[in-house]
Image 1: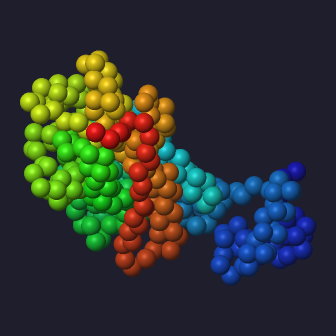
Image 2: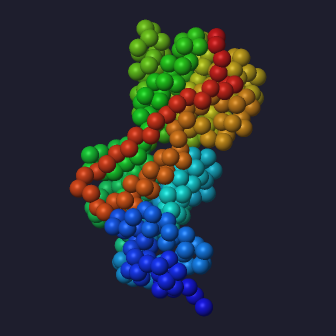
Image 3: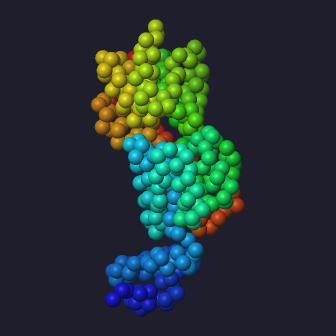
Length: 338
């Protein structure tokens, strides 16, 4: 026979209403009582009836996750699985489920979002990217559903809740680190410039290079909207009369491809060209040589995004909050003095 709230209340020697308030995490119940009741619930094998709670609270207990690409393509990028781990970790603590967009194109992803919102399948959304000319964020604003963006919103910045790194400063730090190693000819291979993170990191690189007289060379700046473009980009850089002695890659996955292309061209990392990356994912550890990478605390980005969203769902605020997650450089074998 299933354990009921009354059974838990009797065993914990508290009122049934107290157990209900513990389940809803009421601030009116002390932490001591919450711990006591939750321990009894665990020992007795009591599980919250989420369906009943949904009916009472008019809540789905679900948050939607908007991917920037198809699910398969996104999950091949080590950034997104770690962000999802962070989101899932906090959501699980709050008894929330997650629902991920599954469209294969931008238009299909947008229709997924429409179905989630219009069908009232989710209480809120996490948009895992910030992009110019994006249809999702304006739609969510118009619908008035709680949402949070991972990245600084390109439009309506002051109206939108977001979690981000200071990507301008992170790129400045990476560039300054290479300059301190003696490098002056530093190339920057950025991502798709429709995304805010790519624009911010390029800005940080430019600022750092301009702060040192005559170091900025526009020929060293390249945009890699896809991994397929990296081989052509590297051929162009290596063909320059003054080829770079160091490269800043847009992320660990792109930097792994850069390293692979350099190896094919018989260019050694770091002896011939130093390489620094962003995100400090598992790829940075496993690459050979291991990648120096700016740790953007990817898990924490996801965790804080979920926390902000669920707090907003439970208690809507009158202003849009923003959280900046700190970064630091993890020095490994792919960089050296010149």
